[in-house]
Image 1: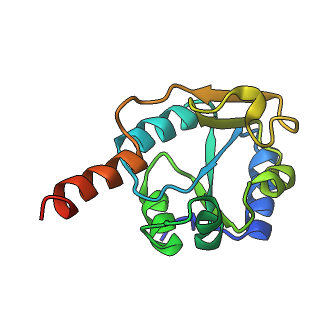
Image 2 (image 1 turned 180 degrees about the horizontal axis):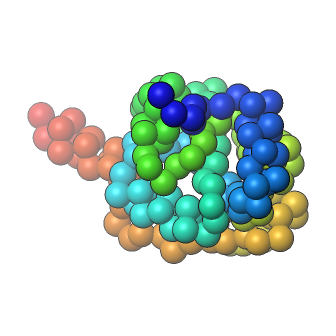
Length: 158
């Protein structure tokens, strides 16, 4: 059946250490990934191109609720399953904190990546990783925008 992609912290730490001994360049990114859309796909492809292995940290349901009070729309198990199904994603892990700082500190990736709405100096974990990237933001594609469109088209027009 191939390698498991969804790992708990300890498993992820051990796997990253193994990959590092093989000389692999580890890329880490994170987010809620509540409604995965074309902007996410482009972003994950670009992140993966920066190294050999892409690890995605996903905010737990509790973490998303603290950060975005009326979300998540999609439960964490489903969000993780969708991300793990993407070919450019090698590993997925869930974190319950508001930021992925502890996971970044644990695995010490070679590359840290966030979307273009983040300035490099504001990216959580930038103090731990030498190679930090803020990838271009895809205009007109966002989870919030999709939710607003659904409300406008299907809720307010009735």
